[in-house]
Length: 484
Ligand code: ADP
Ligand code: NG1
Image (cartoon, rainbow, N blue to C red; front, side, top):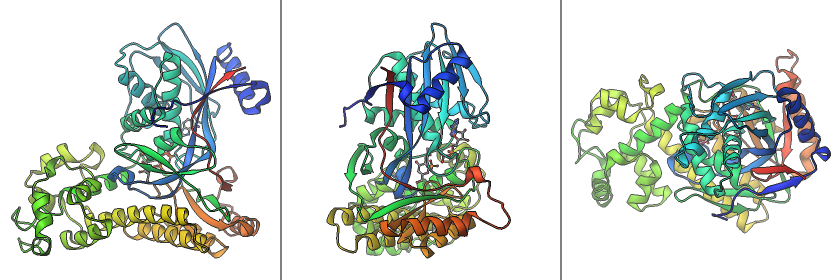
C-alpha cells in the first residue's frame, strides 16, 4: 500500500459522458485530442477537525465529486490552462518559470502548486509544457476540499507528463506541502485521502509516517452532506492560519511558566510545576523553539490525550493571550514572534486563544480514536454512539475552536431535528458543509424535510445552483485514464 502508485485505467471515452464532453471541449479549445485524463476526488471529513496540522489522526472518506483534467503534453514550454467553468478564466505561462502569487488565490495558482511540487521533488528546472482543460464538480470553498483535489490532480498530471513514478503516499506528502504555496498552513488530510482513498471504506489517516487504515462504517446508516451555501475561501482570509498559529503557540507555551521563565501569567507558582514535576523535567529537555505541533508535546511527555486535557487546564489560562504576554513567556521579541513563528497573514493578530484551541484539539483527537473503536467493535447502538461523538465534535468546533457560523449551526440543528443521530460541520468551517449520520430507513424523509426547512426559504435567498444535499458513500482515490 505504502509503495503503490495511483492506478491507470483504460476506458472507452465514448461510454463516459463526462469524459466525452471534456474531450470534445478540449478539441474545440486546443484543436487537438487529449492524450490522457486524470481525476482526483474531494472528501468529507467524518470526524477530526482542525487536528491534522497538529499531528493528529483524522477520519475522512473520498466523495464521488472530483476534479477531472484532460491533458496533452506539448513540445514547447507553454503551459495553457482552461476550465469548463467560465468563472475560471484561461491562463497561460511558461512551465519553466512558475510564479505563485500568495496574495491572490486565483484558481490557476492551485494548479501551479501541484505542478511546482512535482517539479521540485525531481529537482527539475525545466518542464515541458502542456494543454490542460479542467472540469470540477466539488462545490468550491465548502469544506469538501475542492482546492486540494485541484492541487492533487495537477500533481498527478505533471508526474504523468514527465513519465515518472511515485507512490500514493509520496504524492500525498508532496501535494500537502506544495498546497502551502497558496499561503494556507494546512495539514495533510485532504491530499492524503485524495490519493489513498478506496471505494467502500472510510480511512483513518495517521501522520509522521503517513498511513491510511480502513474504517468500516456502519451498514445501517448513511452519511449525508448538506451545504450551508456560505462560502469561505481559506487562502483569501486569515481565519484558518490564525487557528494554525494558535495551536503552534499552544504547543510552545504550556510549560514555559513557573520554573522556566519569569514574568509569566502565574508568576512562577505554576500548579503544573508542583503537580507534574516529572512532566516539567521532560518538557525542559524538549527544544521548545523547535516544537510546532501539539502532538509532539504529547509524544514527548508520553501521556494520554485525557491527561493532556488536564495539563492544558493547568498550564494555559482561558483568557486570551496578547502578543506581549506570549513574547514574555517565550523570551523573544515581538519582531521574532512575527517573523519566526507567525505566518505572513497573522502577524498583526492581537488575540490568541490558546487554552480553547488546545482543549478542542486534544478532545477532538480522542473522539477520532473513539469513533474508530466503535466502528471496529460495532455495538448494537453504534449509530447512536457515533452520532453523539459527531455532535460533541460540532459543539467543540463551535464553542472552543470558533470555526462555525450561524448558518452551519442552524443547518446542524435542522439535520438533528429531522432524524440525524449526529451532525457537524465538516472541513475548515466558517461556512461550507455539514455531515450527518442518518439511520438508513429515515433517509427519504430526512432529505425531504431538511430540503424544505433549510433550502426552500420563503425569501429565496439561497441560489439553487449552490444548494446541495446528498447521501454519500466512500469513493475511490486519484486515477489516470487512457483512452482504450
Ligand atoms: P475548499 O474547502 O473547497 O478546498 P478553498 O477555499 O480552499 O475551498 O479553495 C477553493 C478554490 O479552489 C476556489 O476559489 C478555486 O480557486 C479553486 N477551485 C475549486 N474548484 C475548482 C474548479 N473546478 N476549477 C478551478 N478552480 C477550482
Ligand atoms: P478544507 O475543508 O479543504 O478547507 C482544511 C485543511 C485541512 C484541515 C481542515 C480542517 C487545507 C488544504 N486543508 O480543509 O488540512 O486542516 O481544513 O480540519 O489547508
